[in-house]
Image 1 (cartoon, rainbow, N blue to C red):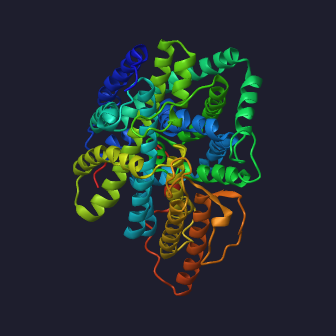
Image 2: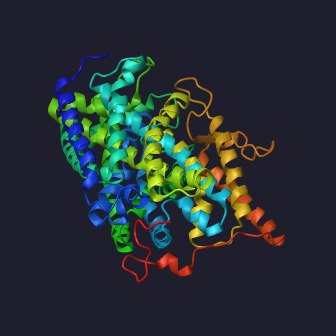
Image 3: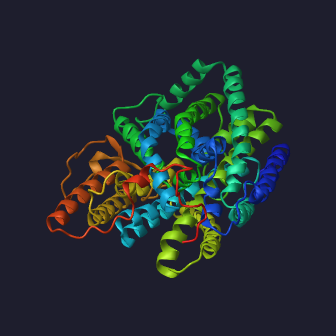
Length: 548
């Protein structure tokens, strides 16, 4: 274990205790009649207004991915890390109208998860189960990314031992998180998100004013980054994109934007909103977070100019690139402010981890437990099952850290994106049309998932020497269609998620045409056109927390 940074540790612990108290008190905040219903425990009563929704969705989407993984990617690879900026900008226009339809049909029909919608839209248990399983599996690496972010802060403060002792502080933090999530449900991260965002705003605005002044200005910072990447062996690294990674940049941005609100935790934040007007205001205003994302990303270049060195992970003996931003704050700021920054990063990992575990628990409860284990489950039994599952999910994410070791932690999220993108035809497109046959959607999901995972399996990690699941960037030379290599010899890279989604859509279209020609039954649509336009306060709207 390294030398403990006592001032930083005390400040971090004080803020952690504050959010812990808020997490337990949240059970009484804006409470409904009972928490023994998924509408209340898992969706906060479906009554969050504009400000709460702003902080909830912002806290949900801007995570340790933002604070740790993106700057670490800029520090290690350069301009490629900026893909997160255009993707976060284009995501909101892309999803603005579909999310309004998802909110309305879910409010009208009492749906708690996207898989609930698919079940109602196609009357297919198989398709709904595939969507639910996909959501749960895709959420695991995303929660794992939060673990990585929190652990990087703990390691920087000196809690950097090997073996079980090295993971003990992280385990304690997640036990406490699990307990107040179990008690308070979605209200806990919604309330804590206020603290998280306040800390992030303070830390970022101080950092972007103080660091350039101390390091000689942005010109000096970019010059230092350019000099560093000129000496690296990889031709794809640099402060501008190379010919080989421009396609990867574009497909990463597009694929990530398409995937963003397919994640179950993003849908959970949306369905917790009070009305369509609340969502309209938030989808218009949330791109402001992209400004913070861009400023945070630049800290990766600032770390280069400052000569920041990543800490060695005592458990592996290798340098941990995820400690770059925490180490930058430790080296360049007073101890008390570094403690505030560490608290911002740590709480920025806890809030989304809580929402993600709740969303995964909702999927398990509504679309697997209720469908296959207990069809007659009462709302109270569903809520109890979701609470238990939310505990299990948090610790299941640890498996992704143990078995998937990508070159950059951001690839944990990008690998999850490859998986969740395969639900786009069944969820997003089906909000507008039932042209796809359910057999086509199932076949497309199978094709896209199989090919996507196969391609991911073949990507190595050059940093650790592992041969599989080392990232999400695929050289076109590796594309092999039943022995045919259409881009043999090309080192241009592409995001695996887009390749897998293309296969999914092609197979879904082909099987749909065949199924329609054979006049195969396409299930019963239990939704009605008017369901996609209902709003809060409409006459005869289904009551919140109504019995089944």
